[in-house]
Length: 236
Image (cartoon, rainbow, N blue to C red):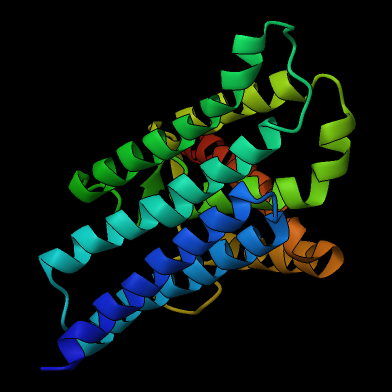
């Protein structure tokens, strides 16, 4: 049956998009890298949607999806950060440190793989997420570099700041911090107020700032998730 191969073909589109994004990232063509990460995210949405629609979900599809996601949402944003760290000031004059310092960026790829492996085995994440989803992390880094490239390169402390931020994002990827999911069981307001509010704020940020607004959208996503958790704890 041809239809059983359609979702996997879409997943491969995600993987190829991630490869193209990585190639552009390593050439410091950050806008094109962001574009293909977004294209990959679109493919990532539609492969699962198509599999459910056609009722052709399969174990190989699940494994292929994780492999594609680690390329597009793990390796590609790591390559974006690697290229940026190769441009910024490094707080050390030793040539060996300066040469190898940018490779810290690839921790993002490793922790993204850990996050995806955990997600595949964790049955608690059917309606919400535990930890930062890899597409959100990828959009944050690629949009941050596109929007803030010039001042990040000019700021003398950006090397340390970016490294600290990378370590924080790695921790968020594999943390047990609950994050709300944009999964609708119905489209009524009740029970979806948080989702609709977040979508409205995200749309406003993207209209105001273009694709680079994704970095602020992801920051808002993390902060709103934390606030929602605190309110739930107080309510209980």
